[in-house]
Image 1 (cartoon, rainbow, N blue to C red):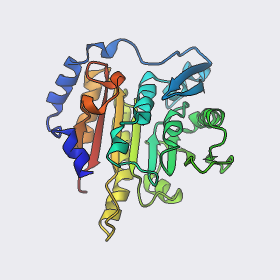
Image 2: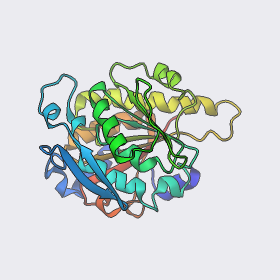
Image 3: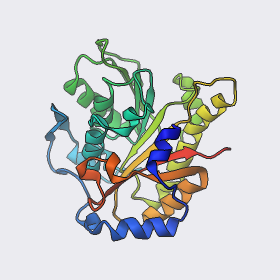
Image 4: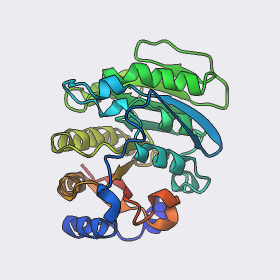
Amino acid sequence: MDSFLLALGDEITDVDEETFYIFSQNQSSSRDLGMINAKAEEVELSINGRDFTIKQSPGVLQSTREGGTTGAALWRACVLFAEWLAWPKSPLFAYSLLTPNSVALELGAGISGLMPLTLSPRVSRVVATDQQYALKLLQENLTNNLPAIKTKSSKGHSSKSQSHHSDIDILPLDWETSDIASFLTTHDLHNGVDAVLVCDCIFNYALIKPLVQTCVEVCKARQTLQSTPNPEASPTVCVIAQQLRQPDVFEQWLQSFMASFRVWRLPDDMLTDGLKEGSGYVIHVGILREQ
C-alpha cells in the first residue's frame, strides 16, 4: 500500500484546485451522457481479448421509476473501467492491492456485470451490489457471459463453478436505506473488503452523501480489524471512476469524499489510453481517514 500511495504522487488537498484543473484539461466532458447505446437490447464488446454480449433494459431506462433507472444501461465509463481492471499493468494488481485472495465490492453495479466478469479470474470473491430492479438482468448477463462461474443471487441460487474463477455474489444494496453494518455481517464481510469499486455513479446531488457514507461504512470494517493484532489487514482502497460532466456535482462529491478519505488522482502512467488526461474520464482513489 505504501509504495502504491508513493507512486500516486501528491495527495489532493484543495477541492477547488482539483476541480478547476481536471475540468480545464477535459474539454470533452460534456459531449454526451455516456451511454453506449441506450436503445439497444444488446451491446457486444471485447475487453482484453474476451467477447461479451450485454443485455440492457431500454424500457426500464425510459421509465419514471422512483429511485432512478440509470443502472439499466451500459455506460462507456464502465467499459473503460473494466478495460483498466483487465489491463496487465493495472496498478491494483501491480501493487498487490488485489491478489488471488482478495475480496472486492462493487457499489452501483448496474446490469452489465463487467466488473465481476473482469475481476473473477483474478480475485477470491466479487460482491456486486445495486438496487433490486437491476439484479435480475445483472444475474442474466453474468450467467450468459461466463456460464461456468459460480454466481449467487440474493435468493441463494447458484450455478456450477470452475476453480480458476472467484465466487460472485449479487446482492441488493440501497445507499439511502440499507443498514450497511448489518449488510456486511449478514454476507460474511464483517472483516471488510480489499477494494470498493464505484463506476460512474456521481451525477446526482442527492446521492452524493449516501454514496460517500456507504463507502465510509464499508471501509470502517477493515479499519476496525486493523485495530486488532492483525498485521495482514491492509486498509480498504476505494476506487472511484467517473465521466466528467458537471463541475458543481463533481466538486460537491469531492468535498464530501475528502472529509472522510485521503484522496489521490491516478496519473497517466497508471491509466489505459481511454482514461488518460483529456479523455473526459478520471479515476480517484481514497483511503479512509482515522475514525
